[in-house]
Length: 372
Image 1: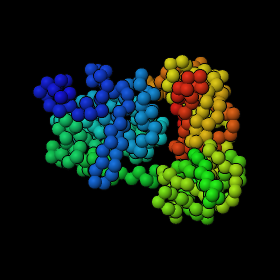
Image 2 (image 1 turned 30 degrees about the vertical axis):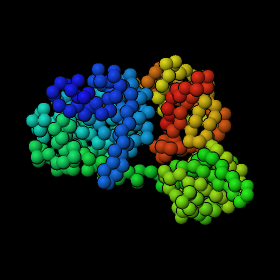
Image 3 (image 1 turned 180 degrees about the vertical axis):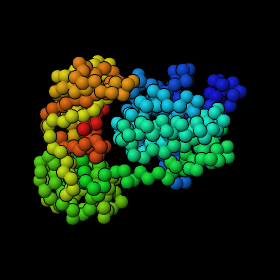
Image 4 (image 1 turned 60 degrees about the horizontal axis):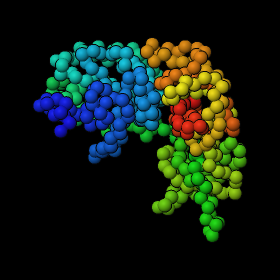
């Protein structure tokens, strides 16, 4: 048993559930992203265990980019440290709407309420600069199970719910943008015998209903939704993140990469954009680089017109006009694309406001970006 090999008779080591690499088990740190799937009677979960060390920033960005909630562990003996600030800052940068701060190892500080309160105050001091609205604090002892699944008798002073109950009940459906219709076309489905033409994809925002007016971007052609089809039959409405096929009332020129938008806030249709990118390649990024960009279902070529700043992960401040972005650096860049892209600011829609950059020579993903 892995726990016995590491700790002898020291008991079950739950960190081994996600630390699967030999190097992770030898060093006692997280290096790569590990995904674990589980469910309770109330909800299904995907747990992404991401590394926090500076040299593995790209791994954390990859794992946290689609998260609904970030769980940050703080050692009660040490309180808020540099790594805590970095984790919280990256979670905020990636637009994760819910933050749970678990003050762990409370058993090693005698379950002291004063220690928990002091750490909570330190995190609240950072909250204004992070911009995360929903922050929850839970004192736990992962080793002993205090406040993990069941309430802890040793911390009767804590008036909140255990961690698992909070995860089961936190509201995440309202985090999606249900006001602005965004439907990136992934595939055109044709049935020549039945004269059928449908546009398949995943709803990225808003609510689609038959009869609603839509605009095919970037072309700007207007039409209405005739029906919303699935394998199980037509639907009265569809919303994110449902995958459906949309039939339009008119024969329009729409294909992969186009986006159906509604009557709400208009999407931006431009060839120039600014974005925060996490650079993931060994070779540094410099102004003038030519790369491929994939945003939603659209593909284009892009030129890096300029590097605007670089984030100092250690000090959490931005340095202007950097010469380059090295591996694991996060910085703001200006891109110019070969064709217009249909996008939103990342803060308004994470699905249409994000992209990846690809080195066409190696087909390697070299950056993940969030549009300003």
